[in-house]
Amino acid sequence: MTEVEKLEKLKSQYAALQQEVGKAKVGQDEVVKYVLISIFSNGHCLLVGVPGLAKTLLVNSIAQALGMDFKRIQFTPDLMPSDIVGAEILDEQRQFKFIQGPIFSNIILADEINRTPPKTQSALLEAMQERKVTASGKTMALPNPFFVLATQNPIEQEGTYPLPEAQLDRFMFNIWVNYPTLQEEIAIVKATTDNRKVNINPVITQEEIIGYQQIIRQMPVADNDVEYAVKLVNKTRPDGELAPDWVRKNISWGAGPRASQHLIVGAKCHAALNGKFSPDMDDVRAVALPILRHRVVRNYKAEAEGLTIEKIVAQLL
Image 1 (tube, one colour):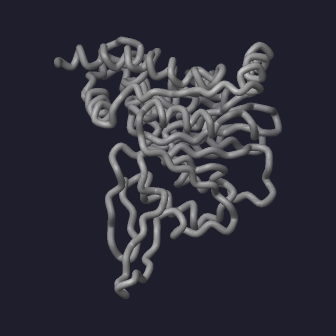
Image 2: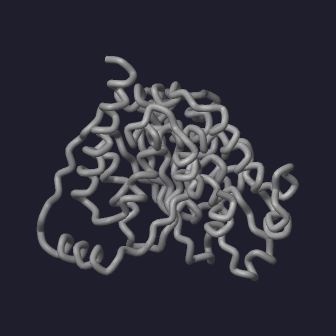
């Protein structure tokens, strides 16, 4: 099968994935699109939204449609790193034996990740970046593919530990999950208040996902599109060469080089899922907001004037 045929197959499988996931949830098509882009781009996702918006159901449905092993970790203030990675125990033969933690899975749902102390949050850092964990002096590789989809609640601040910048930067996308529309909510209530059972069938294999990740990386990109992405990121930095005056006045910290890398890989994936064989500037713009949302830090002046990250990114595009 040629690469063109593989990309055409990816487009049809993407449509089938959306259809399967759509059986379990109503609306949230943008959220599903970005989560799938991050998976095919070999990235991680942070879903931010108030409780009860079916974030966990969404991740569970995607894991089933992808036919992958799925584990959920509920982050609490007393969760320890060993609860995630695993620990050594003494077995019947008085030998130390390593019991793998829930992180040894394809898809990890880190539920309410900001509820646990930094010590435990950092246990995810190595796993997310290196795709391996170190425990009891041994380094172990994690299954391939491996994705962390974390959720957090933006309202409650008491008893939470905000994610450090280094960890936020490890997430490819920061996706806001909004309230459903009136018609969507009516459909949700009708679908969830009877005894209907939904069966989600796997649409794609793990080997196919790994293959698609490699094909997406190999897609050609025009130099002017790479320049556009890098210049866009440079404009977010107050001390950047291309930063406009209003950015210098309103932003205290801009996006780093990882944002530029994610913009190009995300644009390649967005192009592939839409049947194109090479990304253009429109694809870069399509993925810009969720990539820059958690990497650009406003100062007090911008917050006081109600200048949101969404407005800042829209002005820069």
